[in-house]
Length: 209
Image 1 (tube, helix red, strand yellow):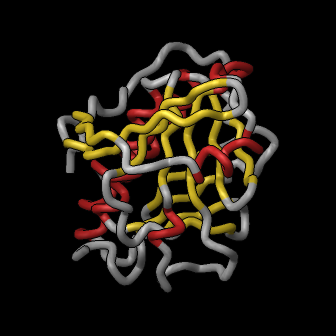
Image 2 (spheres, helix red, strand yellow):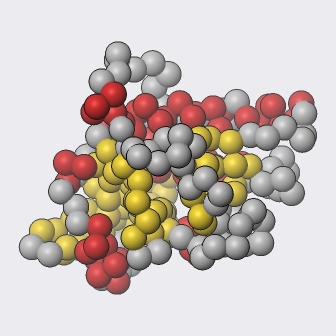
């Protein structure tokens, strides 16, 4: 399944966070079957092909949108298909250049209203990137107030993009050829376990959903 050219229907809002206003983009409809929770090594999401595509498109958009907060309300996607019992979590992707105070997000989220409908055409994930500058490419991952924040630069998001491209484009074929295969995307965050963000296909619904 290629995600380049896919359309991601979103809602765009502007909210005030402290003294500044912030553009927030979120899915027009919550993703189905994408529970996010604390796992054994970090945070984990259990997905189907449809919800994997939604997260991958959000990642690709966040990578190219340094002035936007990308919000996935995954607590609304909670279901029984998960490997740990921790509380359901939301996901926020943003660039460190925003200077965003994570503690202000709860108030900002409460101010979100209907939003303006906007369709994003996914530009895909680049297969190649410039020689890495590891000091600049590290993503930061934190859990604050029931939300998982992934914060970094464009190059940092780009460094993690290949895992999501493989999740969407390569894994479905592997799962059809070998239904028991473990298929996932693993993303590293600074000072966290190497596979801190783990997005894995659901064992029950991976192929047919």
